[in-house]
Length: 152
Image (cartoon, rainbow, N blue to C red; front, side, top):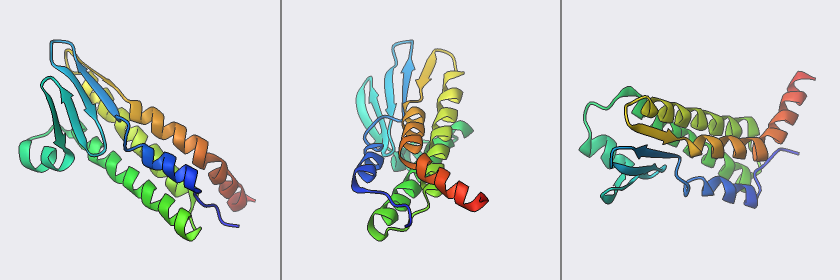
């Protein structure tokens, strides 16, 4: 029987879009920035910037580490598509879904690390933790079975 994502697992996968993937704080009165899949929310002054606008309208000459954000979004969307295929068609390779979540988590860790080396800034990679927990909790058992089938 092929592995597949059930409804509850798919809902958990979708809920990752609702949590901030990174929380960036500025110690010199700059407030806090919450990085989501869809964009940024700044607290000082309160405003939201969608990811499309951030990359294609408002910003030029971005530092290289910022590109970890859209990479993690693409990996997350790939995991959602893989989970959806598993839910609807019953055909999913959990190594793909879980692997994409792990790559998205590593990309978010890279973003937070490189943001934090700048003076007066700190980033908390909540998305890394969330992606790794979901990959381990939902997809690792099935992926482990698949690995064992291949190597036995």
